[in-house]
Length: 251
Length: 294
Image 1 (tube, rainbow over the protein chains, first blue to last red):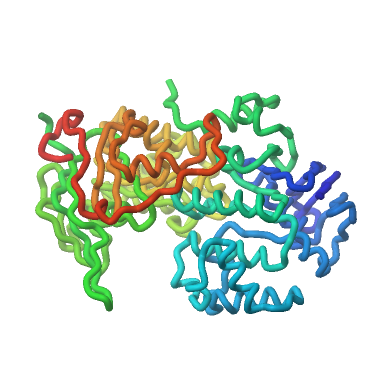
Image 2 (image 1 turned 90 degrees about the horizontal axis):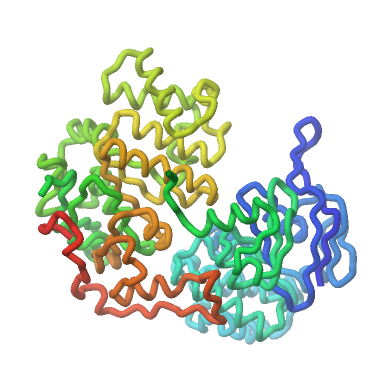
């Protein structure tokens, strides 16, 4: 489904060039859920944004369905296959567009027909119900907003979702609801997920395999079983695992 | 029985709205000793508003009422601004969530710490500078001279938060209110920041109110926990017993967390009940040295 090889992503021009991602490579199979973990600045979100076409300064190889992507703008066919859900639902929804307007615009952009029925279907899919159709973002809670953002991503009927910390702005009880929703949608629609998170337990819950990133490099790719068992090959992975296991006083 | 550092009874914070009065905090009571007290709850549960009310940071038309709010026996409820300014930052300090918004972007780190210290300690400039350097060292900043001359945008998030802590602790407050101090930080930096606060409670006998939504972290880091729901404390218990909590809300919150060692297909979802809003407080009173409070 997705192949990334020798990916370099940078910002700025020399001498101020910052190499955010260096030589990253991984593959995600059809129907798989793959996680990218690491600390802030490790380049995990940058990889996602490069795939989505939000950063033009990259080199290497990104293939979706064995078709290589260029550094140009993504075409419509790409967005029919791949869609992205952002971290902060407070920032990713237009404050003066109703749920109906957000979804209708997306559906029209994707050249969909039967927009009316599709909006109702999307709202049902993400567990919001039709009563939410004409609400504005400020009338929604954080979890409801993230559901709208997921509905918007599903509008194009993509086969792959890029999830950038989809629950880190939400309370834990709401996080559980959204993670369940994502699991259900993946099962129902046969979706492939590429998920970025700093929370190892969320990645452990959602993903089959994961890549650990540090300073722009992928240092280790592991199965979720190894993550659960605390078996990290690299010292940094083990350090990350023990740090996220919680706090233990020094001395 | 030792005298508590801070004693709060029946604290209420009310805001007038178009739909009538809204109580963000609905009568909470607790005592704080030289300990790490965790305050946990979801967004909107009133945990941050409790911290702000103690510091007199609730702006009109918001109202703060309490049967008692005392700092070492001295009433501090709704003091005039002049008096409150002496307490705020001097005897009670607060560290907020995001250092990006709480540091002044157009002053160097050094200037800010020195200003904060001189405001309360009335010290000459060179002594304040010395103190600022000491504080930066105390929060484990390796090159304090360089950091003193840096602007906030030139330091990382973790360093920014340590600078905030250094600034807040320079006047040696008796109480530190930390509102999600580590939420914006990476896990490895988080441990360092927690160690610093832990050391201050142990070595200086400071009282710490640690406001957080992270149940696991609070269970490991704090001594005692208050769990807030809809503006009230619904349960209080020793932090080490958090995983044996009895209130259905606390249990529901704990269950909804994904756990690496116990994988499940679907996460249990919290079913909220109206009775939690006004139900009895589940409290384990035996564990506190302040029988009057929770």
